[in-house]
Amino acid sequence: MASKGAPASPPTRALDSVSGISRKGLESGTVTVFGAVIIGLSVCAPAYTLTSAVGPAAQGVGWQTPAIFLAGFIPMLLVAFGYRALNDRMPDSGTSFTWATRAFGPWIGWMAGWGLIAATVLVLSNLAGVAVDFLYETLAIALGDPGIADLADNVGINIVTCLAFMALATWVSYSGMTSTKIFQYITVFFQMGVMVWFILAMFFFADPNPNTGVRYTPELSWFNPFAIDGLSAFAAGLAVSIFVYWGWDTVLTLGEETKRSKGRMSTEGKAAMILVAILLVMYVGTATATLVWAGVGTDSYGLANTSIAENVFAAISHPVMGGAAILLTLGILLSAVSSINTTAISPARTLLAMSHYGALPASIKKIHPKHKSPYVALLWSSVVASAFYAIMRFLSEDVLWDTITALGMMVCFYYGITALSSTWYFRKTAGREGFGALCLKVLLPGLGGVFLLFTFVQTTIDSFDPAFGSGSSLWGMGLVGVLGVLVLIIGVVLMLVWSRRSPAFFRGQVITRGDDSEGADAAPVFDDGIPG
Image (tube, rainbow, N blue to C red):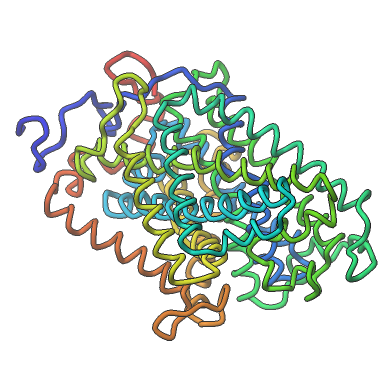
């Protein structure tokens, strides 16, 4: 074997004898179920997510917005079963990258990891954009000067403020998981409390929409996805819906850092199931409440008004909450800022894993000796997301709307691969454990994976229409389609370049391709004697 660090051979490290999976120097035993749920809520950021997604979803499916959020939950639940099974068997910070490599080999595994990283870069830029909007909105309300809110429309000020938010969030993440958890506890409880208040106000307490003078009564058709008009509208709405649930899998990237569970399900597996249930109630409830108050008209507060689509709550917060609107804007601001911080957890740990296994340059895998954070990977995530936002802000005034749709495409791509990884990895052993295991490890994840990959293909085709999304176009094609395909092409090019520089991973010499029949009776055990 070549010396440690030589690019042509697997790096020297403690290996699981079957798979090649190994630890990466992260601090173990620091995250509980409760802590993981809080981090997951912070990543998903319900307040930020909903103000960004309700408008685009309603633009596509109208009164069926709650239905599309319900429809989006179903594949997420199916995928979650596969994630849980893979995590219980192979807990690894690389998640999609590591699992897809084990199931389908290094090339598909690398692209699954790239899909996760690309999705996170897209959402980090979107988060920063929303944070900028709500910072100046909050200052405008606090200082009684509506003109301050217009500062967010100044491209230069917007970009500089965005970079400041990214720098702050990177510094907090750099300080390690302990400081990250404390910061998230405060912001999550505040935003969830304000959102509950906002939902109840739209349902019961606020005056009706001043433009319509009515508060609409919920109908069963609002929750019926089959009432959506057309496959393209359904696929576009579903891509946005999947965006709102995206982020729950971050808790599974903490598999090497959570406290060991005494039950059959891992700590991070329990947290993921709890998190998905909370999100379902929050998202469907908020979508319904917003329809009840705003409707889908084209008036100044209606959800069919394209001018408010990318930031609905900024438009309706004051008529709904009056003087307390500043609490909602502050809640969304904190939601976005804290989510920038925790969202960086997932790509940083995926980059860490890819570097650790030789799929990316070795310099990326460095762990801070004091904070135990993958600080080089964090910096790369932050820098690339900041640069991407700055470029997109110049290309499109509706950058927030377009990145949400492109993000949904990327999420469908790598979630679909991950779900099918569970189906393929457990195909030989799940049946021996009973029908329940066969469903939860093979059949249901497979169904979810196929559904998501179909949605990815359909949305990609539709997104090349210049009218798709915000209507922004580049070279005569829809900006969303160009953005999504360009991101994947960049991934393929980088993969091919690195495969020539460091071929060991791509030859299957680092993480071996296999399935659960190789070692179904025991989880990986590393050289420190701690089960994976």
